[in-house]
Image (cartoon, rainbow, N blue to C red):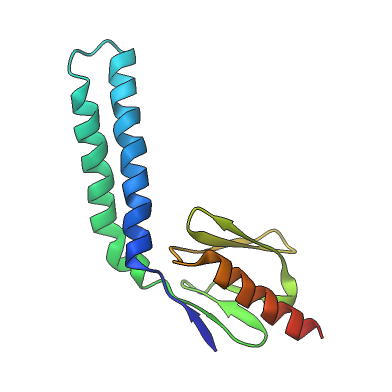
Length: 129
């Protein structure tokens, strides 16, 4: 059995990128509205993402996916049979799995998404053989 655990460094890096976008968006919105205190958009964007990151960290770090010979099992009773997976791809530090029925699952905050995809695809090929 293989486990895919979220990585705290990847989580922090993703939040740093979100923070930059939130700060820029906040400042841009205030500038477009003619607010003379544009800098407060940066403070608000930083505070919003930092609070979210701090609040969600424990829950996100508990979201472990496991893979056995036949399926992937994730948090909150998520499950995808390997023979039901049609696409596996990277989305911003996460691995997205799409099934034949259209279900989409994210294995979040993986330090090496390419290695996760390779392991899933290898297991799929092994099962198909």
